[in-house]
Image (cartoon, rainbow, N blue to C red):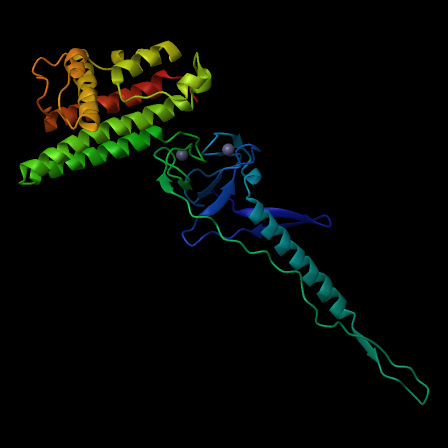
Length: 323
Ligand SMILES: [Zn+2]
Ligand SMILES: [Zn+2]
């Protein structure tokens, strides 16, 4: 992202007005698509450079000329700056025509023209909005900011869902390290259980978004836009039906079974305070499980789950059609 000049035409003359960046060096942008009009920011000087690049809306993915992404406030500002410069120029020209002929003789008439100080048209200043998530694109290094969490990169157009998954799983690894270093067994168990819940919610968030942005390519767009991945077995069946892809086939059978079971354990943690029920025993194939006992989760199991869902995430991106 390189240009931050808005061109304004006045009386046939072209004027480039530099658009100010915010206090962090970001420039506001607005999607030109009428039913999107999404607001986001980019940091000029980062990301791709060169002629003919398009800008992508992070929300709807629409690609268009970067000059169609000015916000309404920026356009009003640029117009007001241009009009002000035009008024200044006219005023200077008139100033040079000032004259004063004093009266001569008894019946002479003096004539003068002087410009009175008057107000010039005001410049319409504005402030860029605060956004929720700062992203540095893994592919093209563009710094940008959006509402929400998931987005297409405005420069290279790559969706950040896999990047978000990987970042969340890096936090899971840190949480497991922390669990290994605390003395309290209760605290360690709490951290391990929490790290499993974080794995599941990270994958669920990633895969939901990945399918949502590709819903138009599925058998049932409404269903594909609202899939849940909290139960991996059910999600795999839905993905097969909607997109015709084999998710379990992307990893080895042992990893798939361990991960689907861990997702069922997460269900017990979230809804049964971690106490094993009939349904878990029947659906998990966990031969060590006893109804009424507390589920046990090993740190190595969570590490394996994190590795498996990283592989499943990459496979999902590779197997699904491009958004
Ligand atoms: Zn848009
Ligand atoms: Zn990018």
